[in-house]
Image (cartoon, rainbow, N blue to C red; front, side, top):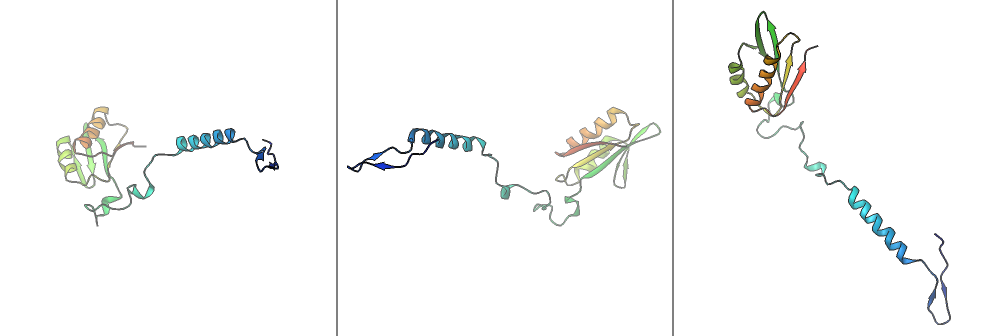
Length: 140
């Protein structure tokens, strides 16, 4: 773009100058570009942190760690281990899970020799107990 110097005639009117039509087009293109590329996400200050305890879980140490359920096979029976509890049926597991805080989630760790229906049943029990954060981890 060649910019011409401003020249004035004897009567004071301007001769030459910048072409304003193309400048307006560039400004509108930039405006549209920035409007399209701006993200419409919430500000970072409004996002909830998983590290800060909520008012209902204040003071508990289980806020940062999810519950871990180990599904193992002992003989012909399937055993669900949750902490020091060893449960052999899903109804007992459901009763125990309903007593736990749900904010941190639950991890279901399944041994290699466990039948698929036992692993799927453990995941379904977690959902039935009201956990929204359920993770499946195969034992290595």
